[in-house]
Image 1 (cartoon, helix red, strand yellow):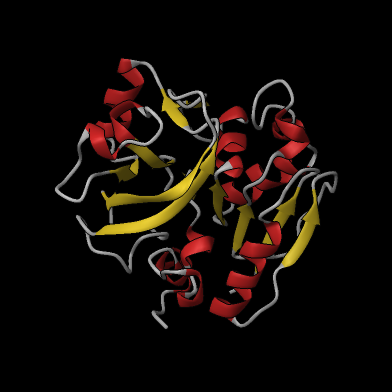
Image 2: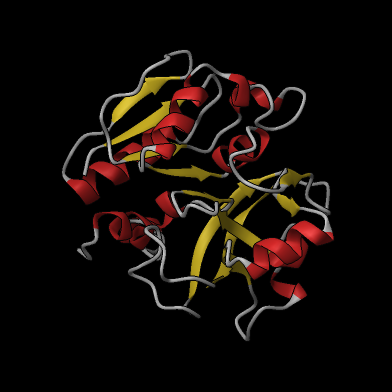
Length: 228
């Protein structure tokens, strides 16, 4: 599987995800600068975490207007998978490629810790090596990670199966497992086509046992269709 990682000014997880992609796929990903207008022929595009443009204006707001986003949108229409992690998720919502928005955490503080997630869908390209209902652990690292949408939008994306991951406590989905005030504890969503997913927790930081866990590795292995 060939992949590309988009690099924005302020990205700080682009190398992390590149290392994981190379370990999982055996192929070094292309690192694509945000001002590029074309992408190489790939099967996956990742918008990594970080603080693009220093989170100026709103997290992801300026990066959403980078020239490369037009190419990302066109590649997604052609069937290429797109994964936005943390700031990448923020960028995808700002670019209207995913529904909703990421708002300031209800605590108004930056949060960096492991969280529990429940897999709501195991039939996507990003989650097919999980089982529906699996509870997994991945780290978060954000100040603007509270997923927001109005009630009609929330009802629609729930009804259309666009919620892929949800924050949860060990005993199930509860407010006590919601670290940032996300509406309905939503941690990750997918678009209607099933080709674009945004996820606030960092799967690339939970892809190596030396880093404390491998629950996130299956996101990338799912894309290859092979558990390693």
